Image (cartoon, rainbow, N blue to C red; front, side):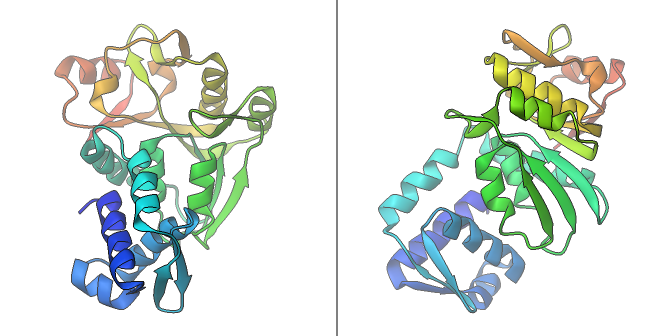
Length: 255
């Protein structure tokens, strides 16, 4: 069961019964108590549950919850879940630092950060910041700027300037398109500028995107293949896609 499916199930139980027990759910769903607490934190962040000792109680109707979760569910959800799981292997050691780009796959990656894994995390994405506040071991820095409504992430010169002062261990980078000729690219010039700054703010750049983004070129390029250290994608990537990346010295991980 994927995280979004599990969270929807928990919401349905809240709607039906009004309260949930962490221990009972962990046993029933064969997951850790930590996983259930993380799911409840997501629901609480969205104003759909209120956590109490040992579990949670309902905060809002199921109809509100269903629409909220549906908005976060995108195409290729299964692939993105696998990509996030493989990308988690590139999280730095305890005490390390991470820069997180906005995106559905990077959001899934946040769900996989262990609650006891001490990290300094910087992001310009408001939805990711909301999730990260539920992880007690994370020291969170939210990068400012004008918030772009489509992505709920900060863009603009102030965001770029803030990143110029950052040197993190790992950057997890998302993209709308990828090709050998144009590199990684997106529709929006301000978003591209921030993504370029994100990539330059870390010693290692790990790009996370599903295979549907290959062989597409958008107007504004932000990173060439030569500037990427690792690409984590799904097994739908063609042999030509993989060869092109490896020819540029990129480590390719297929999920």
